[in-house]
Image (cartoon, rainbow, N blue to C red):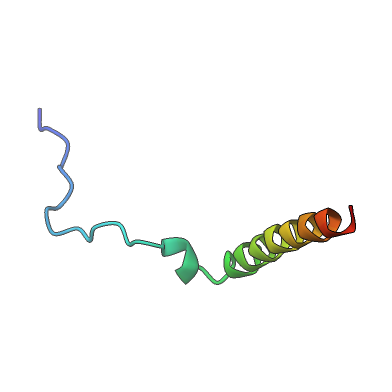
Amino acid sequence: MESPAAPAATADPPRKFAALRNKDCRPYLFGAALAMMADNIEHVITYWIR
């Protein structure tokens, strides 16, 4: 009986920030960043009005 093949030692390591290279993920990340920024701005405006 043979043992299962081990992963190749020459496999590429995981890429950092791989989500930024995915074209489907970019609108989500941009929208999420925009929503967080808008929420923080809303808090600042609320504090100014009080």
